[in-house]
Length: 218
Image 1 (cartoon, rainbow, N blue to C red):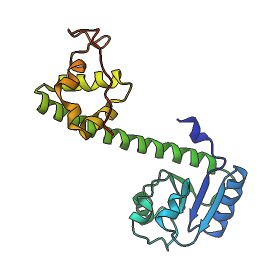
Image 2: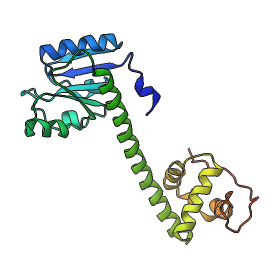
Image 3: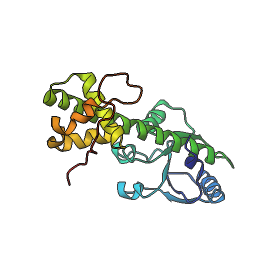
Image 4: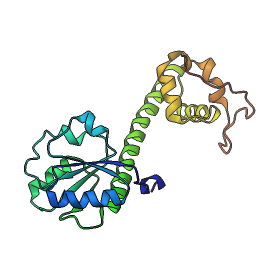
């Protein structure tokens, strides 16, 4: 768990459709934790929701009939307040892509741990999506190198790995740069990285090759 997810003081919280009792409990706990809560009985705009650090949504409120995209696609940690176990209510809460839930009625404590779990889970999901996008760039860069340099799959990945190591970048970063500029994918520009022997590689090739750093053209 990231240590920063344990720090909640100063966070802005937006609570949607809460009933008076739960609202009071959330307000008290938020102030005690050093957070600034805001309460809405109507759904704010997407831009307004994005201005908050996290969202709390009362999943039991029958007036919650907004289109799915209005909340589900807001890239913020979301906490569902759940009291009813009606399948339709639970299904709605899941459709909003909540990352934690808090059982109703809200007590005098429990908000802090729920926020920590919600933020950690949200960070994990964002990280997984970022890695998935990065892998797509790596695969595309490998395909481009295989086609344009007439090398095999293992050599294309070794080239990306050596290039990343020698330029102090991630494989995803160098993949994006290669895809953005075809001139960077020529054999003269990449030969040193194809021949470079990484420590512990065990492959033949000049271990002392001079490697010029790759820079994306501006």
